[in-house]
Image (cartoon, rainbow, N blue to C red; front, side, top):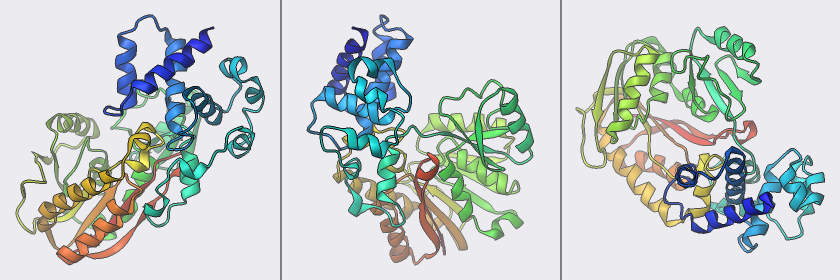
Length: 384
């Protein structure tokens, strides 16, 4: 009885949800107004909702109940009482590889339909592998700060939290691992996705050898700024963002990270040019985007995405760069990055930088993370 009610509750939620806010915010508000749901109830209903959206644009013709159950089956790896009650045959096969589970479905299922924009992908992304990544909950990643490698590993071991050491500075853990009670976040380690950490591979060697003026122009909460500081603590750092509240969070993080010397600016870079020309040796432009490379974390975004949004993001990105690039010093570097897998937001924007400002591309490409249960990003290094 309970399991059937979970299914009906999830059907109602997915029917009413319009994608205007992140799903986890919507569910939090929904459950806060309905205290009758216990933790077990919330867990199942939430899991069903995410299973629905993890199918992306596939199975759109299935009735809601079948879509929910199909998503639940394809995204789970362990037998479950819920599936035993409603689809016992599937429950017995739950540990099979997902490719074999797809073959058991009664209705045709095309993995490529999860992300149907294959012809718009950035070069170097495996479309099939990217589609399969939607069916898996991504991992949590830590970037261990210099000098804390053994400390963090020892603390995780003491807490009996399984982890995978990708390299000395990069650790993956199961999503939802509770680590903030024993690891000093931002001082010892930073929560930062694997692909986001890979942006550091585009930092030029000369960056490490001298004191340079650096501008993180869309800094957000400052994760990449901390990464730049860890590469060279002598940098003269400026950070900016349009959101005052997120910069307040950045300041708190910088305090924990030991970054005390920096300039901070609230700036709408689509309207103003907030720096003198030729000021910065390195500009990091991690611009607003569709976030499509992170849709395995927020699968509802893929379900509600419409192609016309790409032109809007492209216009936003190029307008920001119009106001940012003039601040680049002669022979300076622009590192352009997105959390997008769309060519329109990646290669096309880099082409804009070349044609409009004469910048030279030194390195560029996708930063795939699906092979490690991580996000997929894009980054390019250009020079003036």
